[in-house]
Image (cartoon, rainbow, N blue to C red; front, side, top):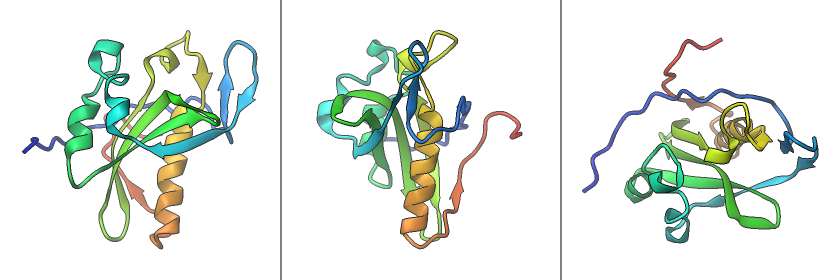
Length: 141
């Protein structure tokens, strides 16, 4: 059995968008959320620059892991999230932008906002009125 860990989220929402925005061209790209699967593990490892062990997260039976991709391009993962259904809200365990979407030279803005929005919409669709909880690593503003 994989040991469960409580994480403190330190993700900064860089931009609220209906899509993700290329920081070089300014072009906007619609996104899709897909369930994370075994085929995604090899591309989202620490060896490839990801900060968290998504393979271990995927194996936890109380969690669902999803990937954010640009529409019609599901092989390139822009970001990941892990959530649990707590019966009256969703708990967001982890959220992470792809390594190329971090820092001042990131390729796309809006990834964290899209991931949080998906979690809120999932909560709404489940009848939880959009309630989501998470543990923040830093002070919420």
